[in-house]
Amino acid sequence: MATPNQIAKELLESGKVAVVVGYANGTVPGKTQTLIARTAQQAEKFIFNKYCINNLTVYLTKSYKLPKPIGIFVKGCDAKTIVGLIQEHQINREDVYIIGLPCDGVTEQVNGDVLGKCRMCAVHTPKIYDVLAGEAITEVPVDLNKRFARLDMIEKMPVEERWNFWMKEFDKCVRCYACRQVCPLCYCEQCIVDKTQPRWIESSPHPVGNLSWHFIRAFHLAGRCIGCGECERACHQNIPLGLLNMKMAKEIFEEYGYVAGVDPEAKPPLTDYKMEDDEHFIR
Ligand code: SF4
Ligand code: SF4
Ligand code: SF4
Image (cartoon, rainbow, N blue to C red; front, side, top):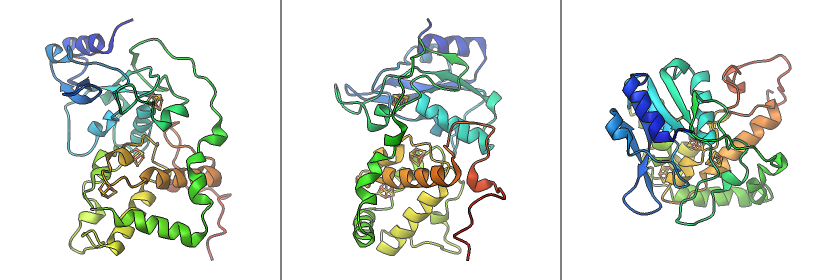
């Protein structure tokens, strides 16, 4: 079975891809960094291990504009983003060569526990790939009833307490937008928060502007966020952005039976209309 760096070398040597986006060792133990290789020699540095956390599909959008076709290392959770980007016509399937990575789980610390998302993972082997870099992993069924369990603490709070909780969290936000930059599905060329003529949203870290920013971020990702967790991981203020994303995902699932990142042919519910859609909220 070929290793990820052997696969990348072969793809570059044969000219099947113009670049490969993957992982390389970082500068300290337990950390990895992104490597974009254009030659087979550069591809020798590729690795894959439990410290390869980043969702590299972010390099398929935004202003990176890498030459195509793009070879890319993709874990099962990251592959859901590719599904979303295909659905939203941000990438053509033929422009991306997916090097699928069977994955047991990733961790942020040397010998640390795997991330929470890995404990509920049902995609240890990616559902979409061109070549698999390793043996497929047999999925052990997970209890889907527990996938929104993280929300329990917030949903149990009375409304006022919940409001105070979020206002306190949003108050910590310094509007650095690291959460936006790291999100592969947050790809608008001009984000509404950067618009100054007219200025729709207060841009300084002020409670009113912060509330607007977090509302907009959560709603723009509703039914689209695939739960990679990168936004929350990027937030140095430790704002639990994943709770907002998860609440949106739960509402979308309960209202429309839809899960993001599964079917490239499916129409995301917020871009679609069906006669039987619930309209109780329209007065
Ligand atoms: S969620 Fe699954 S595929 Fe993603 S890092 Fe965790 S174990 Fe790997
Ligand atoms: S990364 Fe955190 S602090 Fe920065 S804008 Fe996002 S939520 Fe605010
Ligand atoms: S978890 Fe965060 S970074 Fe990942 S897709 Fe959802 S909003 Fe984007």
